Length: 308
Image 1 (cartoon, rainbow, N blue to C red):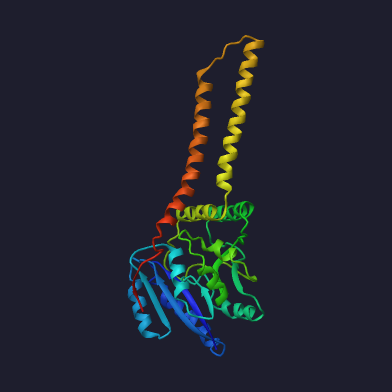
Image 2: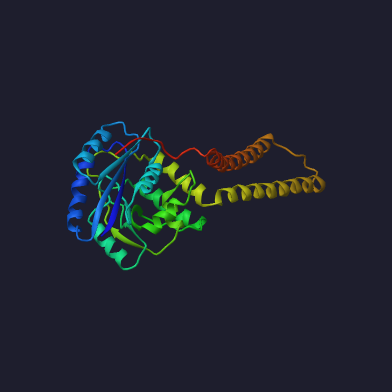
């Protein structure tokens, strides 16, 4: 019988762990003739009583394990730690807040049996999400798919069922700056998606603010596209051409009309324009250099303080 490993990153989720287990264990009972379940919770430096709850449930259920970090390393570190610890023939990643419906595992496993390597999930709508966040999310997927060779599906969740071969391929990618939505797509394999209606959290509050999501999306652009560098290059080329045209215009006007060059405001605007483009280009290049700097230091993605 195959084993299913369920990887569950947690950050300040003391209220959602028991409801999550209650829901997934119903699916476990339903599929007990097909799969054995293994739960791997990753406590990402929570400041509430998440670790205490995980200690309790790991003693209560023999197939529940946990990893606790020395501090908060971020969701990407939690995903990596969970995937590395998973021993199942099949592996899935789920949010503990039950926004990922556990009952979909039945249909996802059926798709795996049909021959797919990855069965992902995507939200059919963004009901209940702030309109501003919905707008920027849609724009992110539209732009990233225009500038990147790696296709990312709009509305796709980290909740996906993967074969061992797929998980091993993802773990072979040893980069420190990880963007899992891109990595899941980059490795390829036969993928299909199941859509479902958006769900609210069962309890607690999300730790993802608009600003944190924005920074996360910027990591996606930097990690999977050279478009920002190309933008800096083309902006520099454009400003150079405009400056040449401006110089020629001034020379021709002086020779034909004799009108002296006038107006320091226009000169100041040009200086500010060119200076702004230079700072933009330096900022973009600096972002890429910072990623290279972090990779070359070879620091571990996470540090484990406790596990069971």
